[in-house]
Length: 343
Image (cartoon, rainbow, N blue to C red; front, side, top):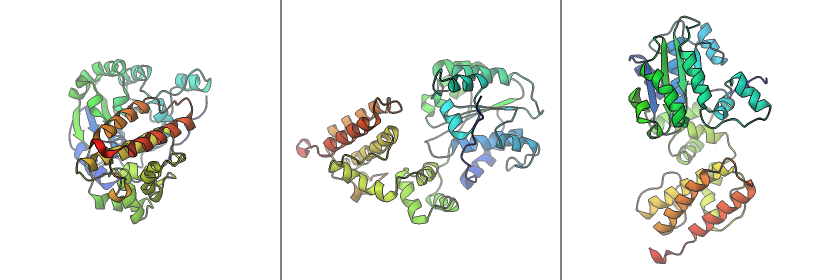
């Protein structure tokens, strides 16, 4: 079995997440649901909670960061922590898969799952019923919780309803409305705080992102700090981002060549969103208004949005990546050049 690879180093905890962590640790409850849009730090906050729950010497400000428990979480080997994520997410973050899952993937019997598998959930339920190895209780972290299908969610439901005495759960979601109502009702809810712009800019500067670039990245990310930081590590510069709508308008065939299909669709959805906003007299969110072409008619934009949602369903497994990107660029060109006579 191949050894799990270490994931990318996590940035220092953002101050707005530390504030939320302290407030949540001051409350009691066996199950939390952290909810809000992507890019606000749900996973980081969830991990901070389980660090504190399992720490040998915790304080009101969370885990000590020095004990054997904190070290075991840092190296992804804590016996009393169960991380439930899609296998693709586990691999990306450097968390180990079960021996069976790793073996099946290594032997090319299947690809890593993009959902939280029911087999993994059943193992987590069994884990929750075992005795704590370190006598500090146990913790189960589920992220992103909306990646549980109905069968997987139902496998968790009974344990959430009648949890063993020493296990606590934290579910982190970027689309909590997709969760079963019965799952939501059995958790204490916490809506992620949206930090102030100056807080985000200061935090990004601490990660080495220049202030001018940080402002542009936050716009590209729709004001979401985690997403802005992730964008700073890609080849999509703010300058190229600003030029993209006009490149699509003029029909440049290679306009999307540096994107994966999923990235291209997400970017086109942002352009569609901003053009819809302009069409109804609102301010754009992801682009400066002067970088956008004149908005096409509402029917054309509405149809484009629906087509992009449909394309997103097969974005991870396109039949031919280059052809899909060309088709997306051609579709965008046609929409952006729609005649305005129907307005």
